[in-house]
Length: 144
Image 1 (cartoon, rainbow, N blue to C red):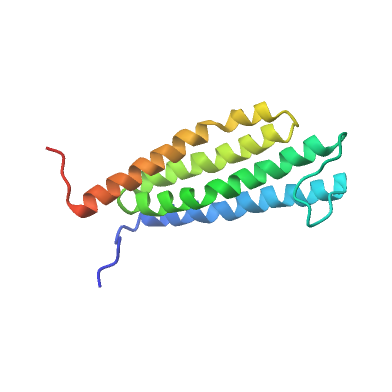
Image 2 (cartoon, rainbow, N blue to C red; image 1 turned 120 degrees about the vertical axis):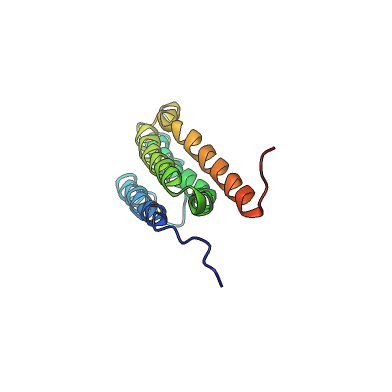
């Protein structure tokens, strides 16, 4: 059986995917700290406290929103990286950095400030395109 990729540069993709562990640990740690600070006990996901609930909920949403996007991100990174490892890795790191900026903007309690990390959507779209192109190349479809 032939491996999907023999390109040693795929190591960049693996390193980038591994960095999501640090991203998710950072976001999770902030939720745990906020649970303690704002006294939001498990199993509640969100706070209904009128004074501090907005801040906690913003911290929780930054984490949850990243969780929601993580599966397609990792899929597009892994697949797009087969044929485009450096491009996929650069786009992946851009997305990871954007999620930190997104979260820090959200942590202010003003949800509009999460848009500071919106450039990550372009990185994710780029990863989607690398995945489609990888499929095209593997299927032998050529542009005429």
